[in-house]
Image 1 (cartoon, rainbow, N blue to C red):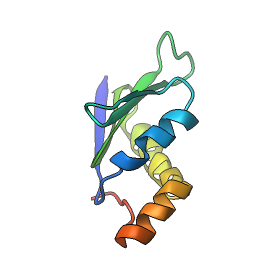
Image 2 (cartoon, rainbow, N blue to C red):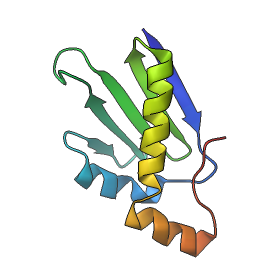
Image 3 (cartoon, rainbow, N blue to C red):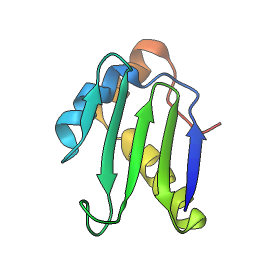
Image 4 (cartoon, rainbow, N blue to C red):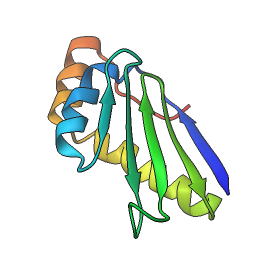
Length: 99
């Protein structure tokens, strides 16, 4: 099993509560400003974890590193469509991107 981490260029912590509401089974950890969720074929057995942090998105317990890289890129692309991210970009002049 492997882990994949993607560093972001902008702080996404302000939109984590919105993601918590949108992602089924997600858990928002306010004190840590982090969001975790379990994804995969069987969420209770198997699958893998995704963690969103202020400047990072990470996945763990993955068998296929290349597939995990694509999955994280897809999540980042999805974040860019989030209305809260668009508002954030207008306020700060920055969009989160992978470093």
